[in-house]
Amino acid sequence: MVTSVARGVLYVHSSPRALCPHVEWAAGHAIGRPVSFTWTDQPVLRGAQRTDFTWEGGPGTGAAIASKLRGWEHLRFEVTEDPRDGVDGSRWLHTPDLGIFHAQTDAAGNIVVPEDRIRAAMDAAGTSAIELHRELRLALGQAWDDELEPFRHAIGTSSVTWLHRSAV
Image (cartoon, rainbow, N blue to C red; front, top):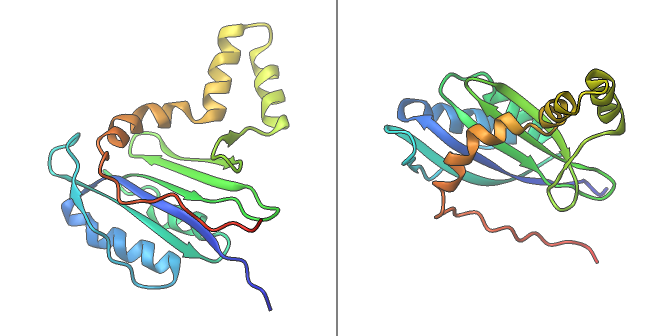
């Protein structure tokens, strides 16, 4: 019996120091095994910690991780689940102010906006280009990217290596 393995990365962009062991426990529970992260100071937010962790698990593990962590006060994170044969990837972003955002991703990691979502944006915008721009930014999760971007740049020493074996 062949089982599908999902892979991805959990980026915790900022967590209060006291919350770090709880984040590890929740992520480990979602992955199905205990995990231990290497935490470093987050220079963008005094007193906060950051980490990244490459994970492997069953399909849907990325959603399970995001579900375990969503809504935690003062926690900023991203979870990715890489695409695999016949299945799109996914990306979840969370900030304390905005909550959680989910999008499908393609093989290159780009957000894929479904046709129905684009049509809904066009309908909502009517003839207003400004409103269409606003709707498309919402569909792409731009507000989440804008809030997380300073935290991403602060991780120039990331331990994640983006090499996964692929079938040819």
